[in-house]
Length: 236
Image 1: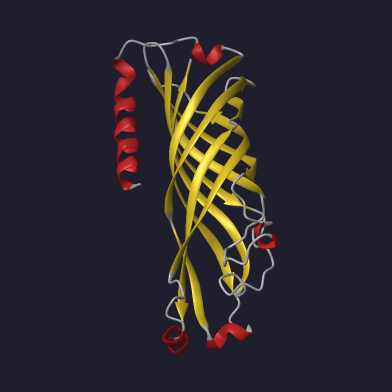
Image 2: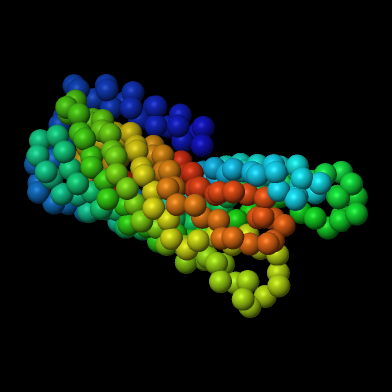
């Protein structure tokens, strides 16, 4: 992720120096509607609350979540609302992994050596984000922008109902999520297409925990998704 942030800074600096260059796609932002494709890399985790007053206190000391990588691909529909604002719809698919680390009591771990210290919870989300894009003034072939909006996401890999068919120990999540998003990015006007690089934060608003007696989930009061996306967009 640090590598992509460094690339973003480099492109921003390159864009600032583009004032003296030939202006590409001079009328591109005047078009009412245009389309594109977006690909990106994600880092995702859970924001969780661990209940330390449950009967598990003699078994589990705590649970932590750490960022894990994923991949994103989407199409972009961009509607011009005025000189400074655009409305964007970005339906796509995001493959994400969220890691859970468990801290077991020493006595319990001694008697249950097969207990897992870490678990990866994988999801395949179909997402429909709708965002408002605020564009700053254009400088040559460079134009920074901010975004804010929301998204509905459905997990096609959800194991929510899996408990009815198997006795495996799994972490089950709700299939649907609603998220708030904020982002910052920059458009670069190339000879034939507009290229953008964007950094976006996605905050899940829905508690994804499915009530369960499974030891790997029982001590958690709530699970909310958190995702950082570095996205690259090509619009024509």
